[in-house]
Length: 395
Image 1 (cartoon, rainbow, N blue to C red):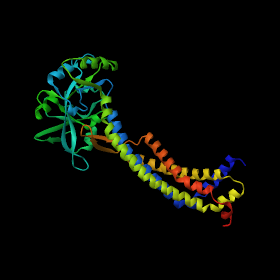
Image 2: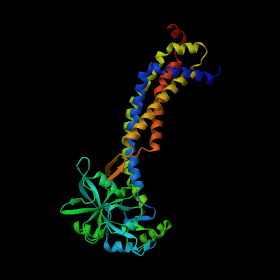
Image 3: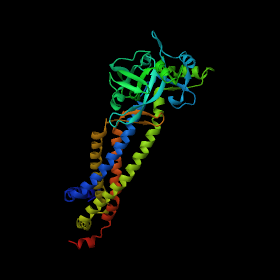
Protein backbone atom coordinates (compact mmCIF):
# COMPACT_ATOMS: atom_id res chain seq x y z
CA UNK A 1 0.00 0.00 0.00
CA UNK A 2 1.60 3.26 -1.10
CA UNK A 3 1.74 6.56 0.82
CA UNK A 4 -1.13 8.21 -1.09
CA UNK A 5 -3.57 5.35 -0.64
CA UNK A 6 -2.64 5.17 3.06
CA UNK A 7 -3.33 8.90 3.44
CA UNK A 8 -6.70 8.62 1.70
CA UNK A 9 -7.72 5.65 3.83
CA UNK A 10 -6.71 7.27 7.12
CA UNK A 11 -8.32 10.60 6.18
CA UNK A 12 -11.56 8.86 5.29
CA UNK A 13 -11.68 7.14 8.67
CA UNK A 14 -10.82 10.43 10.38
CA UNK A 15 -13.61 12.38 8.69
CA UNK A 16 -16.16 9.63 9.34
CA UNK A 17 -15.41 9.92 13.06
CA UNK A 18 -16.21 13.66 13.24
CA UNK A 19 -19.86 13.09 14.31
CA UNK A 20 -18.51 11.34 17.41
CA UNK A 21 -16.72 14.56 18.33
CA UNK A 22 -19.40 16.96 17.10
CA UNK A 23 -19.42 19.19 20.19
CA UNK A 24 -15.70 20.03 20.17
CA UNK A 25 -15.74 20.36 16.38
CA UNK A 26 -18.59 22.90 16.52
CA UNK A 27 -16.68 24.90 19.15
CA UNK A 28 -13.67 25.12 16.83
CA UNK A 29 -15.87 26.11 13.89
CA UNK A 30 -17.59 28.84 15.92
CA UNK A 31 -14.28 30.21 17.20
CA UNK A 32 -12.73 30.46 13.76
CA UNK A 33 -15.98 31.77 12.24
CA UNK A 34 -16.12 34.51 14.87
CA UNK A 35 -12.61 35.65 13.98
CA UNK A 36 -13.53 35.78 10.28
CA UNK A 37 -16.70 37.76 11.03
CA UNK A 38 -14.83 40.41 13.03
CA UNK A 39 -11.88 40.49 10.61
CA UNK A 40 -14.15 40.89 7.57
CA UNK A 41 -16.52 43.37 9.22
CA UNK A 42 -13.75 45.71 10.40
CA UNK A 43 -11.91 45.66 7.09
CA UNK A 44 -15.16 46.17 5.17
CA UNK A 45 -15.16 49.67 6.68
CA UNK A 46 -11.82 50.39 5.01
CA UNK A 47 -12.99 48.82 1.75
CA UNK A 48 -16.20 50.84 1.74
CA UNK A 49 -14.39 54.07 2.55
CA UNK A 50 -11.81 53.35 -0.15
CA UNK A 51 -14.56 52.63 -2.69
CA UNK A 52 -16.33 55.90 -1.85
CA UNK A 53 -13.14 57.95 -2.04
CA UNK A 54 -11.39 56.28 -4.97
CA UNK A 55 -14.65 55.90 -6.88
CA UNK A 56 -14.91 59.67 -6.90
CA UNK A 57 -14.14 61.69 -9.96
CA UNK A 58 -13.36 61.37 -13.61
CA UNK A 59 -9.86 61.42 -15.17
CA UNK A 60 -11.02 64.43 -17.17
CA UNK A 61 -11.90 66.36 -14.01
CA UNK A 62 -8.96 68.25 -12.49
CA UNK A 63 -8.54 70.04 -9.17
CA UNK A 64 -6.33 73.10 -8.81
CA UNK A 65 -5.21 74.11 -5.30
CA UNK A 66 -2.55 76.36 -3.87
CA UNK A 67 0.91 74.77 -3.96
CA UNK A 68 1.73 72.90 -0.75
CA UNK A 69 -1.92 72.23 0.13
CA UNK A 70 -2.90 68.63 0.80
CA UNK A 71 -6.63 69.39 1.16
CA UNK A 72 -9.05 72.06 0.00
CA UNK A 73 -9.31 73.27 3.60
CA UNK A 74 -5.72 74.51 3.54
CA UNK A 75 -5.88 75.99 0.04
CA UNK A 76 -6.96 79.46 -1.05
CA UNK A 77 -7.17 81.74 -4.11
CA UNK A 78 -8.26 85.27 -4.73
CA UNK A 79 -11.01 85.85 -7.28
CA UNK A 80 -8.42 87.17 -9.74
CA UNK A 81 -6.26 84.05 -9.37
CA UNK A 82 -9.32 81.87 -9.94
CA UNK A 83 -10.08 83.82 -13.13
CA UNK A 84 -6.52 83.31 -14.38
CA UNK A 85 -6.79 79.58 -13.72
CA UNK A 86 -9.97 79.31 -15.82
CA UNK A 87 -8.11 80.82 -18.79
CA UNK A 88 -5.49 78.06 -18.95
CA UNK A 89 -5.13 75.92 -22.09
CA UNK A 90 -6.64 72.43 -22.26
CA UNK A 91 -9.93 73.27 -20.50
CA UNK A 92 -13.18 72.17 -22.16
CA UNK A 93 -15.38 74.97 -23.46
CA UNK A 94 -18.97 74.97 -24.64
CA UNK A 95 -21.82 77.28 -25.58
CA UNK A 96 -22.30 77.95 -21.85
CA UNK A 97 -18.69 79.07 -21.44
CA UNK A 98 -15.55 77.54 -19.97
CA UNK A 99 -16.20 74.40 -17.91
CA UNK A 100 -14.46 75.56 -14.76
CA UNK A 101 -15.92 75.93 -11.28
CA UNK A 102 -14.18 78.04 -8.58
CA UNK A 103 -15.35 76.62 -5.23
CA UNK A 104 -15.41 77.17 -1.47
CA UNK A 105 -15.36 74.35 1.10
CA UNK A 106 -16.48 74.91 4.68
CA UNK A 107 -17.56 72.68 7.58
CA UNK A 108 -20.87 73.13 9.39
CA UNK A 109 -22.37 71.26 12.33
CA UNK A 110 -25.42 69.10 11.65
CA UNK A 111 -26.89 66.15 13.61
CA UNK A 112 -26.50 62.57 12.44
CA UNK A 113 -29.67 60.66 11.55
CA UNK A 114 -29.31 57.86 14.10
CA UNK A 115 -27.56 59.36 17.12
CA UNK A 116 -28.64 62.99 16.86
CA UNK A 117 -25.12 64.14 17.75
CA UNK A 118 -23.55 66.91 15.68
CA UNK A 119 -21.12 65.95 12.93
CA UNK A 120 -18.85 67.94 10.62
CA UNK A 121 -20.80 68.22 7.38
CA UNK A 122 -19.05 69.62 4.28
CA UNK A 123 -20.83 72.56 2.66
CA UNK A 124 -19.48 73.40 -0.78
CA UNK A 125 -20.06 76.69 -2.55
CA UNK A 126 -19.93 76.51 -6.34
CA UNK A 127 -21.45 77.76 -9.56
CA UNK A 128 -24.17 75.94 -11.56
CA UNK A 129 -21.52 75.14 -14.19
CA UNK A 130 -20.26 72.52 -11.70
CA UNK A 131 -22.71 70.04 -13.23
CA UNK A 132 -20.81 70.41 -16.51
CA UNK A 133 -17.50 69.85 -14.75
CA UNK A 134 -18.86 66.70 -13.07
CA UNK A 135 -20.89 64.90 -15.76
CA UNK A 136 -21.40 61.77 -13.63
CA UNK A 137 -23.48 63.83 -11.20
CA UNK A 138 -27.18 64.51 -11.65
CA UNK A 139 -30.12 65.89 -9.70
CA UNK A 140 -32.20 62.87 -8.63
CA UNK A 141 -34.94 64.72 -6.72
CA UNK A 142 -36.12 68.31 -6.85
CA UNK A 143 -33.94 70.81 -8.74
CA UNK A 144 -30.61 72.62 -8.73
CA UNK A 145 -30.29 75.64 -6.44
CA UNK A 146 -31.04 79.07 -7.89
CA UNK A 147 -27.88 81.23 -8.15
CA UNK A 148 -27.82 84.16 -5.74
CA UNK A 149 -30.16 82.51 -3.23
CA UNK A 150 -29.56 80.53 -0.02
CA UNK A 151 -30.98 77.33 -1.53
CA UNK A 152 -28.92 74.14 -1.26
CA UNK A 153 -28.87 70.67 -2.78
CA UNK A 154 -27.65 67.66 -0.78
CA UNK A 155 -25.96 64.42 -1.74
CA UNK A 156 -27.90 61.16 -1.56
CA UNK A 157 -25.56 59.67 1.06
CA UNK A 158 -25.80 62.85 3.15
CA UNK A 159 -29.61 62.70 3.04
CA UNK A 160 -29.46 59.18 4.49
CA UNK A 161 -26.90 59.82 7.21
CA UNK A 162 -27.77 63.30 8.44
CA UNK A 163 -31.07 64.37 9.98
CA UNK A 164 -33.77 66.31 8.08
CA UNK A 165 -31.98 66.52 4.74
CA UNK A 166 -34.84 66.03 2.32
CA UNK A 167 -36.44 68.22 -0.31
CA UNK A 168 -38.50 70.86 1.46
CA UNK A 169 -36.56 70.78 4.75
CA UNK A 170 -34.17 73.44 5.99
CA UNK A 171 -30.63 73.44 7.39
CA UNK A 172 -29.66 75.98 10.05
CA UNK A 173 -26.05 77.06 10.38
CA UNK A 174 -25.39 79.98 12.67
CA UNK A 175 -27.87 82.70 11.76
CA UNK A 176 -28.39 81.31 8.25
CA UNK A 177 -31.24 79.07 7.14
CA UNK A 178 -30.68 77.01 3.98
CA UNK A 179 -33.78 75.51 2.29
CA UNK A 180 -33.14 72.12 0.62
CA UNK A 181 -34.44 72.14 -2.96
CA UNK A 182 -32.80 69.04 -4.43
CA UNK A 183 -30.91 65.80 -3.89
CA UNK A 184 -28.09 64.78 -6.20
CA UNK A 185 -26.43 61.44 -6.90
CA UNK A 186 -22.85 60.74 -8.01
CA UNK A 187 -22.60 56.94 -8.30
CA UNK A 188 -22.08 56.53 -4.54
CA UNK A 189 -18.89 58.62 -4.47
CA UNK A 190 -17.72 60.87 -1.65
CA UNK A 191 -19.38 63.84 -3.37
CA UNK A 192 -22.71 62.47 -2.13
CA UNK A 193 -21.62 63.30 1.43
CA UNK A 194 -21.66 67.04 0.67
CA UNK A 195 -24.16 69.90 0.71
CA UNK A 196 -23.94 72.36 -2.22
CA UNK A 197 -24.87 76.01 -2.44
CA UNK A 198 -24.06 79.12 -4.46
CA UNK A 199 -20.42 80.19 -3.98
CA UNK A 200 -21.19 83.94 -3.90
CA UNK A 201 -23.78 83.45 -1.16
CA UNK A 202 -21.36 81.31 0.87
CA UNK A 203 -18.66 83.97 0.49
CA UNK A 204 -21.02 86.53 1.94
CA UNK A 205 -22.23 84.34 4.82
CA UNK A 206 -18.71 83.42 5.92
CA UNK A 207 -17.22 86.83 5.07
CA UNK A 208 -14.71 85.37 2.65
CA UNK A 209 -14.79 88.28 0.23
CA UNK A 210 -13.96 87.38 -3.37
CA UNK A 211 -11.98 84.23 -2.56
CA UNK A 212 -12.08 80.51 -3.29
CA UNK A 213 -10.25 77.42 -2.11
CA UNK A 214 -10.06 75.35 -5.26
CA UNK A 215 -10.97 75.36 -8.92
CA UNK A 216 -12.46 72.31 -10.62
CA UNK A 217 -11.81 72.02 -14.35
CA UNK A 218 -13.04 69.75 -17.12
CA UNK A 219 -10.32 68.75 -19.60
CA UNK A 220 -10.86 68.86 -23.35
CA UNK A 221 -9.55 65.27 -23.48
CA UNK A 222 -7.87 62.92 -21.00
CA UNK A 223 -4.54 63.70 -22.68
CA UNK A 224 -4.92 67.45 -22.10
CA UNK A 225 -3.81 67.14 -18.48
CA UNK A 226 -0.11 67.77 -19.02
CA UNK A 227 -0.76 70.79 -21.24
CA UNK A 228 -3.05 72.25 -18.57
CA UNK A 229 -0.59 71.50 -15.78
CA UNK A 230 2.33 73.04 -17.66
CA UNK A 231 0.27 76.13 -18.45
CA UNK A 232 -0.68 76.67 -14.81
CA UNK A 233 2.56 75.77 -13.06
CA UNK A 234 4.66 77.97 -15.37
CA UNK A 235 2.39 81.01 -15.05
CA UNK A 236 4.29 83.53 -12.84
CA UNK A 237 0.98 84.87 -11.52
CA UNK A 238 0.11 81.53 -9.92
CA UNK A 239 1.52 79.13 -7.34
CA UNK A 240 -0.60 76.01 -7.73
CA UNK A 241 -0.86 72.23 -7.46
CA UNK A 242 -2.69 70.49 -10.29
CA UNK A 243 -4.09 66.98 -9.72
CA UNK A 244 -6.68 64.75 -11.31
CA UNK A 245 -9.75 64.40 -9.11
CA UNK A 246 -9.52 60.56 -8.70
CA UNK A 247 -5.87 60.86 -7.62
CA UNK A 248 -6.73 63.51 -5.05
CA UNK A 249 -9.45 61.44 -3.39
CA UNK A 250 -7.35 58.27 -3.51
CA UNK A 251 -4.66 60.11 -1.54
CA UNK A 252 -7.31 61.42 0.89
CA UNK A 253 -8.36 57.89 1.81
CA UNK A 254 -4.90 56.55 2.70
CA UNK A 255 -4.65 57.71 6.33
CA UNK A 256 -8.01 56.35 7.46
CA UNK A 257 -7.48 53.11 5.54
CA UNK A 258 -4.15 52.59 7.29
CA UNK A 259 -5.72 53.21 10.71
CA UNK A 260 -8.60 50.81 10.06
CA UNK A 261 -6.30 48.13 8.66
CA UNK A 262 -4.04 48.42 11.69
CA UNK A 263 -6.99 48.08 14.09
CA UNK A 264 -8.54 45.25 12.07
CA UNK A 265 -5.37 43.21 11.88
CA UNK A 266 -4.64 43.71 15.59
CA UNK A 267 -8.12 42.51 16.57
CA UNK A 268 -7.90 39.60 14.13
CA UNK A 269 -4.52 38.48 15.47
CA UNK A 270 -5.67 38.61 19.10
CA UNK A 271 -8.90 36.78 18.38
CA UNK A 272 -7.06 34.41 16.04
CA UNK A 273 -4.78 33.30 18.86
CA UNK A 274 -7.83 32.32 20.88
CA UNK A 275 -9.30 30.47 17.91
CA UNK A 276 -6.02 28.62 17.37
CA UNK A 277 -6.00 27.44 20.99
CA UNK A 278 -9.56 26.28 20.49
CA UNK A 279 -8.55 24.35 17.38
CA UNK A 280 -5.59 22.84 19.26
CA UNK A 281 -7.88 21.62 22.04
CA UNK A 282 -10.33 20.22 19.51
CA UNK A 283 -7.66 18.31 17.61
CA UNK A 284 -5.97 17.08 20.80
CA UNK A 285 -9.36 15.71 21.83
CA UNK A 286 -9.73 14.04 18.44
CA UNK A 287 -6.30 12.44 18.71
CA UNK A 288 -6.95 11.29 22.29
CA UNK A 289 -10.22 9.57 21.35
CA UNK A 290 -8.56 7.89 18.39
CA UNK A 291 -5.37 6.74 20.15
CA UNK A 292 -6.15 3.04 19.88
CA UNK A 293 -7.40 3.45 16.31
CA UNK A 294 -4.17 5.21 15.27
CA UNK A 295 -2.04 2.60 17.06
CA UNK A 296 -3.92 -0.20 15.27
CA UNK A 297 -3.31 1.43 11.90
CA UNK A 298 0.36 1.84 12.74
CA UNK A 299 0.57 -1.84 13.75
CA UNK A 300 -0.98 -2.80 10.40
CA UNK A 301 1.83 -1.03 8.59
CA UNK A 302 0.49 2.53 8.12
CA UNK A 303 3.21 5.16 8.27
CA UNK A 304 3.22 8.18 10.59
CA UNK A 305 3.03 10.70 7.74
CA UNK A 306 -0.49 9.67 6.57
CA UNK A 307 -1.65 10.03 10.17
CA UNK A 308 -0.19 13.53 10.41
CA UNK A 309 -1.74 14.54 7.09
CA UNK A 310 -5.17 13.20 8.10
CA UNK A 311 -5.15 15.24 11.31
CA UNK A 312 -4.13 18.40 9.44
CA UNK A 313 -6.79 17.81 6.78
CA UNK A 314 -9.46 17.53 9.47
CA UNK A 315 -8.23 20.75 11.12
CA UNK A 316 -8.21 22.62 7.81
CA UNK A 317 -11.67 21.37 6.80
CA UNK A 318 -13.16 22.46 10.14
CA UNK A 319 -11.48 25.85 9.79
CA UNK A 320 -12.76 26.26 6.22
CA UNK A 321 -16.30 25.53 7.37
CA UNK A 322 -15.84 28.21 10.03
CA UNK A 323 -14.35 30.58 7.47
CA UNK A 324 -17.18 30.09 4.99
CA UNK A 325 -19.88 30.51 7.65
CA UNK A 326 -18.12 33.57 9.08
CA UNK A 327 -17.75 35.13 5.64
CA UNK A 328 -21.42 34.53 4.77
CA UNK A 329 -22.60 36.01 8.06
CA UNK A 330 -20.33 39.05 7.61
CA UNK A 331 -21.58 39.54 4.03
CA UNK A 332 -25.25 39.22 5.04
CA UNK A 333 -24.90 41.43 8.09
CA UNK A 334 -22.54 44.18 6.97
CA UNK A 335 -22.33 44.49 3.18
CA UNK A 336 -24.07 47.69 2.11
CA UNK A 337 -24.57 48.96 5.68
CA UNK A 338 -24.70 52.76 5.49
CA UNK A 339 -22.62 54.78 7.93
CA UNK A 340 -20.45 57.88 8.16
CA UNK A 341 -16.98 58.53 9.50
CA UNK A 342 -14.48 61.32 9.78
CA UNK A 343 -12.00 61.91 6.98
CA UNK A 344 -8.86 62.41 9.08
CA UNK A 345 -7.31 64.74 6.48
CA UNK A 346 -10.20 67.14 5.81
CA UNK A 347 -11.93 66.61 9.22
CA UNK A 348 -15.30 66.33 7.51
CA UNK A 349 -17.84 63.52 7.64
CA UNK A 350 -17.88 61.07 4.75
CA UNK A 351 -20.96 58.89 4.27
CA UNK A 352 -20.31 55.49 2.75
CA UNK A 353 -21.42 51.86 2.78
CA UNK A 354 -19.54 48.88 4.25
CA UNK A 355 -18.15 46.74 1.42
CA UNK A 356 -17.62 43.02 2.01
CA UNK A 357 -15.74 42.37 -1.22
CA UNK A 358 -14.68 39.03 -2.76
CA UNK A 359 -11.11 40.00 -1.88
CA UNK A 360 -12.02 40.31 1.82
CA UNK A 361 -13.87 36.99 1.77
CA UNK A 362 -10.83 35.34 0.20
CA UNK A 363 -8.56 36.81 2.88
CA UNK A 364 -10.98 35.52 5.52
CA UNK A 365 -10.74 32.01 4.08
CA UNK A 366 -6.95 32.25 3.94
CA UNK A 367 -6.87 33.39 7.58
CA UNK A 368 -9.16 30.55 8.64
CA UNK A 369 -6.99 28.03 6.78
CA UNK A 370 -3.88 29.37 8.51
CA UNK A 371 -5.59 29.09 11.89
CA UNK A 372 -6.59 25.51 11.12
CA UNK A 373 -3.08 24.53 10.11
CA UNK A 374 -1.52 26.13 13.18
CA UNK A 375 -4.15 24.56 15.41
CA UNK A 376 -3.54 21.11 13.93
CA UNK A 377 0.25 21.00 13.91
CA UNK A 378 0.90 19.99 17.54
CA UNK A 379 -1.96 17.45 17.70
CA UNK A 380 -0.76 15.97 14.38
CA UNK A 381 2.75 15.65 15.77
CA UNK A 382 1.37 13.94 18.86
CA UNK A 383 -0.64 11.52 16.72
CA UNK A 384 2.50 10.58 14.80
CA UNK A 385 4.36 9.95 18.07
CA UNK A 386 1.76 7.64 19.63
CA UNK A 387 3.66 4.56 20.95
CA UNK A 388 2.14 1.59 19.18
CA UNK A 389 2.77 -0.94 22.01
CA UNK A 390 1.43 1.18 24.87
CA UNK A 391 -1.59 2.25 22.87
CA UNK A 392 -2.46 -1.33 21.95
CA UNK A 393 -2.40 -2.29 25.65
CA UNK A 394 -5.50 -0.11 26.03
CA UNK A 395 -7.48 -2.49 23.78
